[in-house]
Length: 315
Image (tube, rainbow, N blue to C red; front, side, top):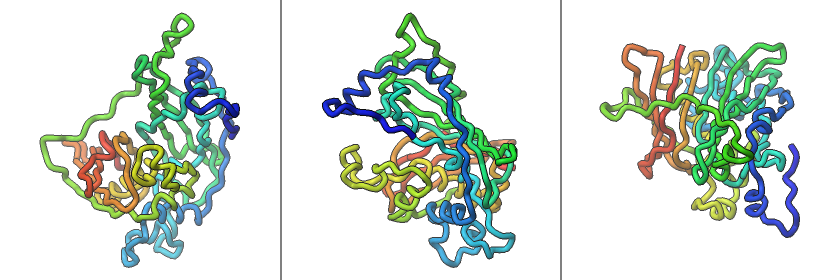
């Protein structure tokens, strides 16, 4: 990944203000295929980074981090979101994105077949949507990744929805640039009835330090000084770590802990999570569609909703 060039007398804020995103440039931006090998050790580490194994007597969790479990090692389906990742390309100078203000707004995933415990994979990334919300309101960008085996079998389709807070109003430049219709909105969770399932998970204090090893080395998740400068009292947990915790909660409560049963998981990120807190996932059945679920997650200690508008589909 190329580094961002900043002149000595030019601050990050000054640099980003001078940049402008351009529809055709971003939509046609080429991404080299990301070829990656992950082994059983990587699969174990992913599960451990989410806190599986914190109860040494929980035999149901063994298949996700112990090769000697009955049936052998199995990969959690949410591991697909960290495979074939092209890196934080949005901070590269040619994008025009005010990356300092970029927020990860939603994550959507479709599983087409179970992830192997070990494989050679290829990530094909592209920008599918760029939507102008207006000056002062930002823009929405959707990045899609098709994760395939080295032999070309489709494993997963992953969509990341990013909120470009500093880039609204781009469509008014140069006589008007295109603006795509946004993705179909996610449905809010029911407010008229209690959840059908509730799952409670304690987040280990070192969870963010472990999850960094999945490839996201943003110091916001490790360095207290950086976190304070960003407005947080201490390092926060990665959004995709919270996403993985919710995926495991769905499997544990509704999917018989069988990773092959999870076919889709969509969520909206609404607030940060701190390592050491307790995540409560609330799940609702969809009437007349037992394999479709709605969900949200909140932090017990602050009674704060941190993931909302969740949707999961089971086989």
